[in-house]
Image (cartoon, rainbow, N blue to C red):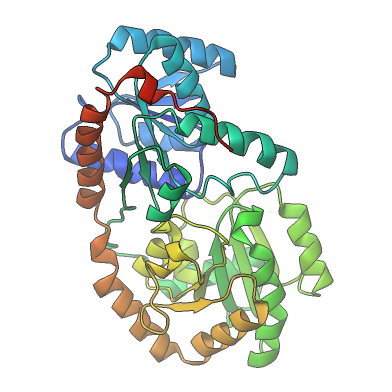
Length: 381
């Protein structure tokens, strides 16, 4: 039973949607079922794919109570699978009441999930790790995340993407975006698809923007698609760098294909990511040159100068230099795009994701036979 927040967005939501599609394709809906904690955009997307998605609404306490009853009804041979810190807490509490086993997929660095608030970081990081240490094992989107849970067996699961076929016209997408933003069609467009959160380090790209424009001697616009609590801070940074007229915050964008097709380059400047950030896969799939911060998850997809370009975390000057290189040499950029499509994308098929989950479930079936004492490690910082 896969349990997720219905209002989830971003990479974790895309991962779950790909997983649901692979389950349907393999005709495993009777074996792997989905439960949404409340409603929202992810629930809407999954309802369009799956024949049935059960919804558990109400307060957090009410959801725990409802889920605990369902766990008792399902029996001990059912493994409960949480996605994300909020679902981890609800599923852990329900499993504790019902004496059932659960697992979780760790999509991002658990020490950096709440950087936007010092209070939340101190409290919820500790609480999330406490819950994760009571699983029968975890799935990780980045093998390095396993080091934060040394007492739990970890199973790597890749993201998945289906190759694009019959994509819309690039020129049409650029024209529509420029018209919507009221900017010249000949403008250079740099794009980011990410939530507005400190872990994404969007300020570095904003600070690099005037440097890039000066180097290229032409207007350069930055388009950011994603929701988040950091909007006002990022708007302030744009004003401080005198680029407020060239930075465009679109909020949550459901259909990202037209946006990717309108980009000259895509940037992911994160401080932490899973092992296969979906937005990089997605951008490369649509034929957009990728630039990313030099961190493990992104290095798994980008070989500098071969399948994209890397820059040091938080280094606006280095990013500006890389962007100038990409934007001045479109033919070289497209060679990297072609290499990305040929060497990177084939590693991330829906079948590979499904196989990773099924293998992990099978292994956890043995782990579930461990004693209750082994399931209850002591709380650690």
